Length: 121
Image (tube, rainbow, N blue to C red; front, side):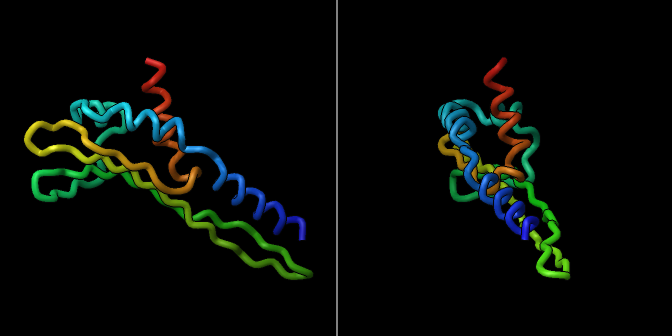
C-alpha cells in the first residue's frame, strides 16, 4: 500500500506546483515582437494560421510509469504528462497579443525554467 500512497503524493504535488511565475513572464511578452518568445522558448513545434493571427505552439509530453503494489501483486500505473505553450501573434506586425501555458508541471518544467532564466538576464 505504501507505493500507492507515494504515487498519489507525487501526482498530487506535481499538480499543485504553481505556474504563476511562468504565466506572469509570458504576459510580460504581450506587446513585444514574436522574436522575444522565440529567443526564450526556442523554435516552436507548430504554427497555426487563423485569419490575421498566428498561434505559435510549443508542446511536450511523456508517460511516466510507476509500480502499483497491492497485496502480493504489482501492476504498472501510467501518468500522462503534457504541456502546451501558445503565443498568439498579429500576422502583419509580429506583435504578441496573447499567451497560454497549460499542462502538468513535470512536462512544463523545461519551459518554466527557460522563462525564469530569461528574467534573470
